[in-house]
Image (cartoon, rainbow, N blue to C red; front, top):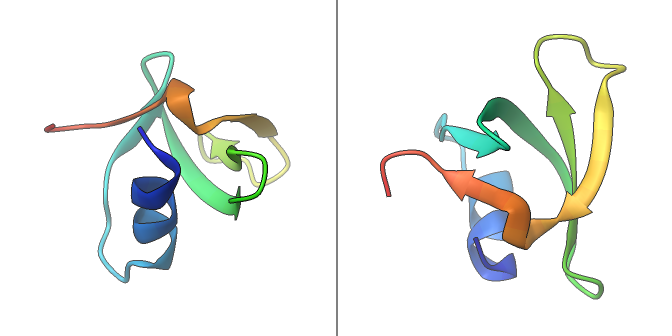
Amino acid sequence: MDITRAKDIYDSKDKIAVHLDGEPVWIEHVDTDNGMATVQVGSRPTNTQTVGVDRLEEQGH
């Protein structure tokens, strides 16, 4: 995924399925300057990771 699409998904009101290494995640923050995103893994809000947006995959695309 590129940084523009990650930002679009973050800003969207729609529920858009995103996966990291096959696991569903929610985008919590997008760092456009560094090409990074903070994502929540699973259903626990404290389980977050900061990863390169190129590791994120939009399901259905």
